[in-house]
Image (cartoon, rainbow, N blue to C red; front, side, top):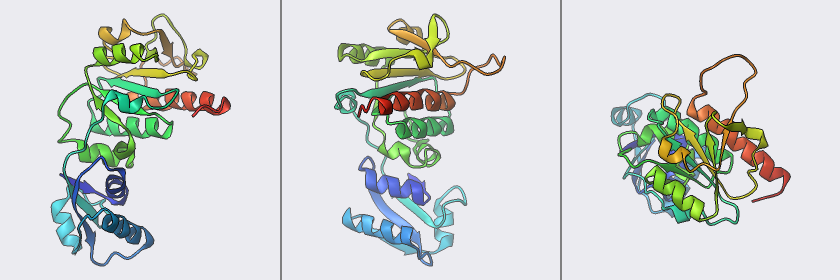
Length: 242
């Protein structure tokens, strides 16, 4: 696949979750970020090719690449134990998020909030990986991602001592009243279908985001992830929990 743009390519080179075959740089591009990328590629023994802007235009789908592209194999995925190494892991599970832009935004929000890993239902994301990486501003390259049956994933998280919070209004408390300083699994559903019953039946506590208006529709998954994820970060920062 082809990755586009400095942010996406740099993240893929540095994260070790992608096998980069080659990086292509506009032969006229000279700046500090480009020099840094070339050094990173040299250290990782990734070939760098200086080519014309027209050649990069020909291998990419858009015109926002800024003269940077890379050919790469598909990303590697992690296992659940990779997300549970900290004393108080913060793991998220997303269901029903099909749009790659929305998923990329969700990954960006969760990674910025300190999430240790995201669980997704197994499916072939290969045709969307470049879009997800770019829309996440590179965060998708750094976030642990586990492809796993949601019901089994929640069950295993519970066995490992994580408290399961599900974003669901029924029988819920405001999200600010939940305790996120302990090991946590945060479950977020897409705005169309929400979370499956297989996940909801294992929830320790449902939580909801109170609105400041009479709007009755759900936030999209990426917005909900930002709100909930940064409340986890806020509580843990106050209590100095890493």
